[in-house]
Length: 379
Image (tube, rainbow, N blue to C red; front, side):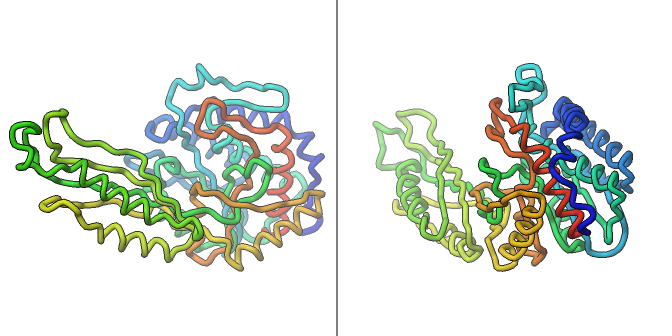
């Protein structure tokens, strides 16, 4: 659809309206754990999609915020755009961290991760409609509400919709240099607990089994599972145990974050965690947890999809680059399904999950033009 390649300058002229939209999104606070707040933002986004001609479906949730799907056009296949409405920022953050324009940077809670992605999608669709674009097949925008806490209520919906589309574009922020994300690591969260036996540390220490000492041995086993050559990292991030210094501790626990590039590493680590053996007689080891997100490797399909995106970008004067990250997103769920997926199509900035969060103002028209070009060419 070469007639619908809109230049970056087209979206530069629309920037004031896009900023108004983005400010509205930012100023509706939406921490994941506050259903009413996330639903308030969801209603706003749903109405914004309706005003742009979408047929909107609501997926009501009992505990988390509701999920929303806007669809333009009909038919099978098509493009699925993915975004999430929730943020890590608690209610009241806006008072300390208000919407603010600081030169070429825009600040506000959730502005990078990822309310700017929602604004980019809606503005790209609106721009295409102004150019008399009619999708050859459907274009859908999925806005979920629980990405920041693991996508537990939305994962099944994400996977179902991804299978029904021919291409998935995730609107998480790009890398700091603007690169798209063509690989992400899978994420595992585990809790290991050692059970020993309490005893008086002075009167009869020999009657006890020191759970903390045993955990020291266990941690050495777990740390040895790291394999940087394969992209596998193991971080023992939390540890706790004991009650008083004069009591042999009966319990010690550790919480572990694991990141992998290769799916085969998931099986290796599962087996290793299940096979942890105690060093001290009578100590017991148990573990719980598992894999929150599978890896999104840079497969041949990923490379081909990126090459096509790079060719489209070149036609509007952009030099598109690629990279990856150890962080996860909802694109991780799509990767194992065999559906082409690209991530990092959102704004460019820094400071996600902090009160330093910002986006680069100039990235808004650039990323909007890129997304519009990809939709116009592929949709």
